[in-house]
Length: 261
Image (cartoon, rainbow, N blue to C red; front, side, top):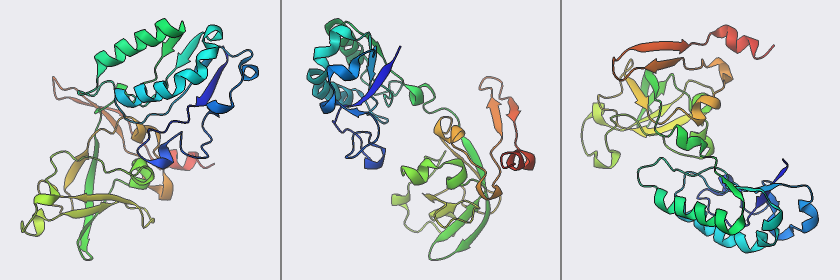
């Protein structure tokens, strides 16, 4: 089959740079330019306009799009509503989604597809790091073996602040002493912007302190780099029933070297 990605021209993205329907977006053929000629030999239409969102943005997108593509329902075999649907999140309106998909299929005669990629691994996997060194420059600073640039690039690109296991609320800090004060964590690379964020660690931020960032099994694993020679994290499996750890893979200097030559 041949499919065509379209731009519904209906923005639901919360961050413009990640919104496929932002002005001048390269992602998808603008639906207001779509003609019957464009769909010759095309079996289906695809759009991907959501990012970590619930059902209502999908409903609004379809409401804005349906009339524009209704003339072609008779010749289309499928519709793909892309990804960005957080269907595994506890508060997602799954019953509404099921009813909606059944209704769309009945009205269009098309097979309906979703691509809930991130939802499959939502809240899975942790990234464990260590504080390597600390110093003071107007606030407590911690250098870690985890790099936003190399290991969690979405922290900089999105941007977003990854949740930490057991972190203490920063807004409740008053005078907990140096050990309980917020610390700005950053990576070991040469980039000034390699900053993860400000945190209050459960047991302070002394050299050797270990910590874990949550929900790291999806984009972080596939977007890692070895910029500056920063090592890639090793990959381990934890058995929650036996508490056993199994190393799947670790990375060495040779992995870094062989990517470059």
